[in-house]
Length: 174
Image 1 (spheres, rainbow, N blue to C red):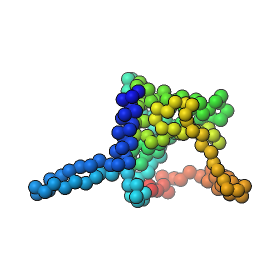
Image 2: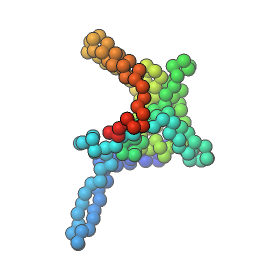
Image 3: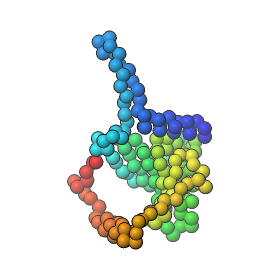
């Protein structure tokens, strides 16, 4: 597991700090930093969301399919497992699935780049980073300044929830 955590740390450093490179141009050495994500200007990045993203396991030809993967510039930045709320302990099951996926015989190659993993079940959510033991996952909580703010938030969610999905001609890459 230590090698996996070191790989995650290396990926984190590359994503946040970039990669320093040198190039010789007509005998003159130039240095620059390649940034994988533009942290200053978010509009310069490309965002994608996919569901049931199929990844081949490292030790077999079987595939695991995380429910939702969020990509930034092609990098799997966030992995989400969704569970039905009528299941017994849905968040615990989602967390367990994340941890199984991160095992040597799972799909570590996907998780190495993820900066956050989420487990959700309708109105409950937990989040963590790679390799986090279940007891250390944080609970997601919405905090509101007032009841009016909470009401507006819930009304907005209800409006968004009941909109039809966009057709492929209406979709926009941000």
